[in-house]
Amino acid sequence: MAREEYFQWAESVLDPGKTFEKPEALADIKIVELCTLILGPSLPSYLSELGATVFKVELPGAGDTMRSLTPFARFFRGCALGWLKEARNKYHLAIDVRVPEGKEVFKDLVKRSDVVVENLRAGTMDRWGIGYRQLREVNPGIIYIALNGFGQWGPYLERPSYDAIAQSESGMAWITGFPDKLPLKSGIWLADYFGGLMGAAGVLGALAYRDKTGKGQFIEYSQAENLIRVMDWTWLYQHYTGKQRERYGNRDVAICPSDVFKCKDEMVGIAAATEAQYAGLCKAMGKPELATDPRFSTHLSRLQEDNALALLDIIRQWAAGKTCAEIDQLACQHGFGAHKVCNGKDHFSDEHLIKRNFTYTVHDPIYGEVMEEGIVPKMSETPGRIKWVGKPVGFDNEYVLKRFLGMKTDRIKGLKERNIIGKWVDTPPGRRPPEGWDGKRGVILT
Image: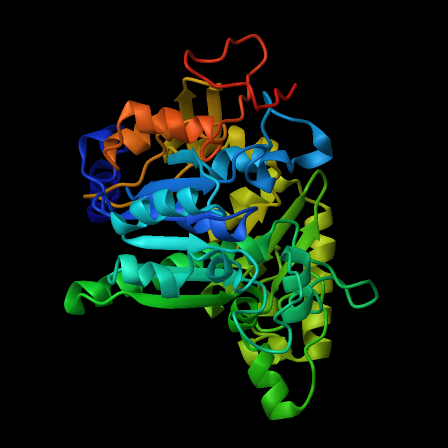
């Protein structure tokens, strides 16, 4: 009864229906983003979900390259699928920061902000006169983070980096895949998204330090180094044994059993890390004697190469005769880990995700109903939220320049006429552009 009472309490205190009634953890933090693609934009995206006000600055015209990157060149109402998510909750400005008047507008925005995020080639912002060394003169408390593939100094400085490059240089791809196959990179842009997350952790640390001292600081981040940091035992294994880590497919060589198996109708992951879980798996297979078999009776014995392969083969034969639903039921009954290898379609109907409001529907005034994955982590007092998806280039120019910088209409008009600010009208099919959109210099995607 006590357990059930706790579960009810946890659900109540994290009730998603009360999200917009509660304050936001970072509501007083303002972030200026001058980024492209994923590594840079994902960082302020994470923090925007926790309430930070993010000003996404792009050059007038096509804007962020991410706007045109989408699988198989199929656009959702004129926008790349990945871009809609990473641009959510942000105010969109188009400012030509390469010219003097544009620099002044940018600096004026930074003067009123807490954080600057950029992921351009090392030294580009400094060359434009809006790098950390120039911006700290405008705002001594500014926290400035520069993210790229190889950092801000070193022999690889001039090399371009993308997610596949970072996964290769870090060795992540080398240890991923099957022994007799080519190395594999992750199916997602892991170096980018995880990099943005770790960059956000650095920014939060710098904000905490500034709260104590009043001092801002410069942060630099390397994609490849971050992936090396999370490659569990790989580095120490090389250090102590002089051997490189190899590829082992889906088998976990530090936990046994832990692998992906084919059953009658699906693929299923099965793992049993503790002795109790392993004993439960043995009972579920109708082979309780395996729990006391000297080859498998302890975790260390199960990790021995020959023993591990023999045990995984026994489980593989058993799983082949069961449906995924049967294995799932047995896992719940006997306490070992098991779950179907899910695809995107599965998530839209997953009762667990629906119950936890992780299937998050955004009613956006431009793109209509958009279903996205929800917010993590869940917070009881200051829950994160999605307010809107990405907007066209320069959509919020007037709003931000008037509300946050106090500009008058005549000056904004002058900035438009001199091409210091601009817009790219990105009209969803069947919808008229909102009143006031400037499409003279724009392109309409279809």
